[in-house]
Image 1 (cartoon, rainbow, N blue to C red):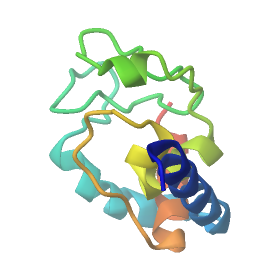
Image 2: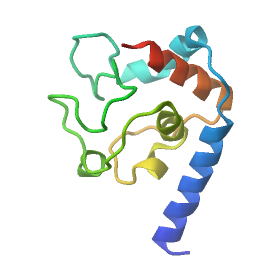
Image 3: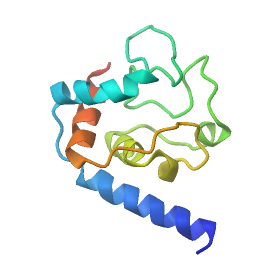
Length: 124
């Protein structure tokens, strides 16, 4: 299998899991976010951590938080962070943006993904 086939297969798998994400519960999603809070801040007006601040992430273009040193892959991804795209990304970040710097394998539980995305949607 060549690398393009492998990346394509990984993206299809990530898209499948994202599509399986359940309607989320933002309260439960806030608890799931604690896994993310190791690297990401989610408070309005606060700075970045090891990862960019995620306040207002839904609807934002990828790679655009001021002051964060994004990978070239993320900057050039052209992604708009919709709920579906976020679900796919947290399922398997490396499949959605190959070459990104996020050192996180992903979340495999569709309900947790749905809950996390529901919480991220409240951050506005």
